[in-house]
Amino acid sequence: MKTHSIGSTPWLFVVLLSCLAVDLPRSCGGELSAKMSTASVSPTPELTTPELSAAGVAGPATYRSRHIILHTDVPEVEATRRLAEMEQVLHFASRYWGRSQRGTVDCYMVGNLSAWPDTALPHSLARVWIGSIGGATIGEEVHSNGRSVRNRATIYAACGPGIVEHEVTHAYCAQTFNEMGPAWYKEGMAEVARFHLSHHRGVANTATRLRELREGEFRSVRQIVADVSFTDEMSSSMQGMVDQLSDDDTHVSVAQWTRRDQERLRDAEKTYAWSWALCHMMVYNPNYAQRFQALGQSYLGGREDRFAQTFGHLERELDFELAFFAERVERGFRVDLCRWDWHQAAHRVHARHGRSTIVQARRGYQSAQVRVRRGEELAYQAVGKWSVTSNDEPVTADGAAEGRGKLVGVVMHHHRLSEPFELGAAGRFVAPDDGVLYLRCQDDWHAVADNAGKVRVEFSVP
Image: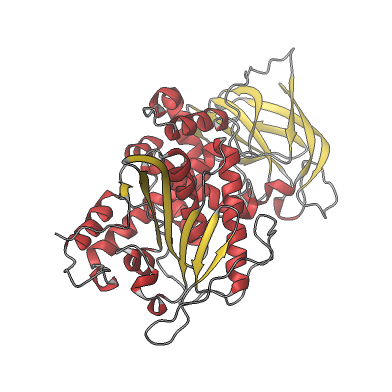
């Protein structure tokens, strides 16, 4: 058996796969996205003299920021931009988990893999990680005088969008805490941190992944958190590739990646989608955010998994909100604005005692604090105006063209929803089911954030 060594004792060989590179670009550094702040990056990054491959092609240059040493063959402007983005991810991570990164991280970001000599890629699996998977992070304990003195993480990644930004969260956790939590958490949170760059609280994931959530088979919260080791099979396969290296070889060839490996990668991609969806919902939904953050800090502190103890009593609520999110998710969807009101008391409307509630335009369904019975008729009147874009004139609860801005309702009974029904500024409605009435300003779910205004809705028995 051939054992790979890079000069120190490995403390983590379970590879943290990015699974972001099903269709990797052939090169990076063409059109760049909008400029981002580079305050955390040296204005003129330090450059090493590029190495030359046997074919005479320029090898990687080295760029440095505060926390990252980036070895890459992409153009300087692209390298500087990606350094800035990785630093912003680290800023999010350090704020969320409450600890600044320890030391610097080595990152190998590759545009043209064939131009890199083996000597420029320290790990024997680097070509497989970069060329077949997209990216991976490994960690080691660095020893001095026979004892561990620090943790060191190294990133190997293709230059495709978001890959190094995903991996740098793994590197932060490995190097700063020496822990990352279960697979669903570490991969889901790496995606949350990566997409935090683009839209802050709004969904910014890829169209392919969002379509998988909308159209694929739903996974419950229990199913997601039970899948704690979905990258293990791929890690075992790659360990086998290393074991089969001959004494004359230093690196595993991309050709060793098999059809079965690719099938595992596709399966893992679906799991990544649901891990991200759960983590995104938990991070940004005020119903759960504080407890989820504390749970994550417990994971990184190496303590036992307490997800069931923390959230087990909320399982039905979590599954409801996750399913609602997944069925409607698009770029821009705000789980904080579309959260559900679970703990507001709801009462019947009586002939002598009407009820009223405020409905905000910049929210999803909100509890009307009214309990109804199937077939019951109630009268209502909505007073006030709201708008569904910053450029529109405010309208009443009758809404504008195509129903946008119209007051609509739904009834929830035992965590199940009736079909939505239109209301308007005034009139009567018949309750479609027993349960609690919820109301909203009708608009596309991904466009709620630019709504403004509110109406007061008064209910009475006709």
